[in-house]
Length: 145
Image (tube, rainbow, N blue to C red):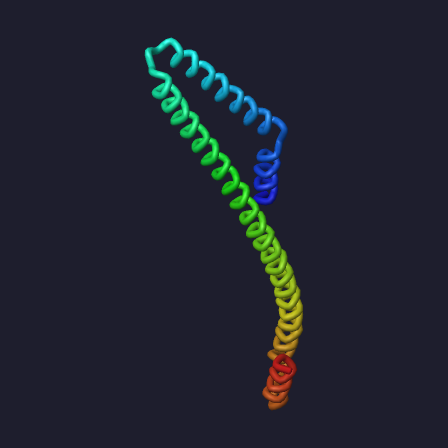
């Protein structure tokens, strides 16, 4: 389940729709830059102020885009690490499942042996005399061997 979620996120990062959204956002930024230039053009700025203000805004926008790209890269790296961790957990679970199945089989075998011993003891309890103790000792030896 975890692997499927991680794969989904990784596919989402490289999905054409995501890339298209990113391209659309870049177009919107370019449009905003154009609108900003129109706004500045109608404002009484000296040539130097206008260029300086525009350059500052462009620099801020580029820094924001770089931060977003860094965040996406970090998310991608984190998802890859999470995928590796999930694979490791999956392997551990498979190993533990196998160990539990082996233990279950051993318990079933021991239960079968105990049933044989219990039946033998039931038969011995019906026996009278000194043979009873010898038979009990032999049964216990068989169980422990």
